[in-house]
Image (spheres, rainbow, N blue to C red):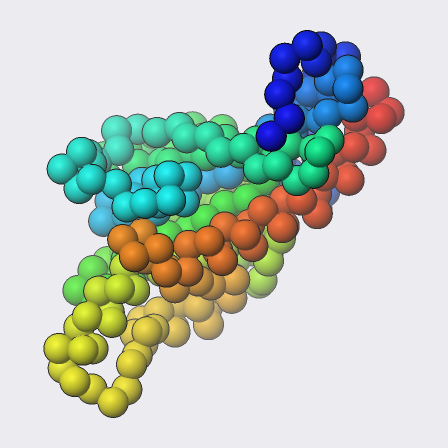
Length: 238
């Protein structure tokens, strides 16, 4: 990645995109023609969805030490820089929002926590024993808030803004191997029903093994890259 040393800031501003989805971006234009776009993406899901583990898997390229993991308190912030080309850096501010029920009031009464994102990832626990509770958390709490904040209907597809991640697919595979079944069902009926009701882009992933994680995040990055021209139009006219 090109160093910013000796590369002075020429312009720095916050832009507000209103259509087709409302989000904010911080743009820094450096003297050597480099632009750094900082946008917010959000991970939401219940406590056992494994959001923090998946984020660390993607950022660090490895599963975090389980002994070092703690349930997120409020919001945890992460960052990842993506080099698009020699002159473009996409800086992702990753908001890892706690899934414990006691934090729901905080989310509900502070819409800005969910607002202003360029992309939202709704994550649930794919493994059989926690699947229904995990999906119920999304449907009962998170989806109504997203719809309220962004004025969208998640019963309709929004591939440029929302994706759903079913984590712990590795455990599903292990269970299948134990049963020696001829049919590997990676999407239990409750998941199929949920995706039929909320037809968003879906990925089966594993924070532990890494399966599907890079594909899911590449999809997110591609969708955000497609929005950079909207940002540039505002920057150039400012």
